[in-house]
Length: 97
Image (cartoon, rainbow, N blue to C red; front, side, top):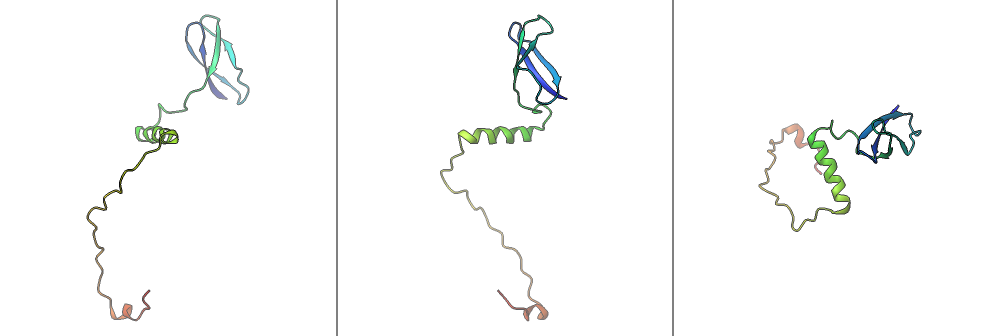
């Protein structure tokens, strides 16, 4: 069973109804006032997601139409050299690239 949301045209009440996948009608009768409630589409599970994940999804959605523009290269910062140990006699005999 899948949950579908419907909003009443008369009083604006949001209804959550379960139907089998693909069998949900376009509109149903409102439980409170008996008016027409149309099916609405919403983002799934954003309220139960972590904030960093929601921010990432919103940023990805925004960059579809408004990409980030870079005006300069990022600074390389201070580069640290990886310490190299002196070669042992056994390692000296290996071929070097």
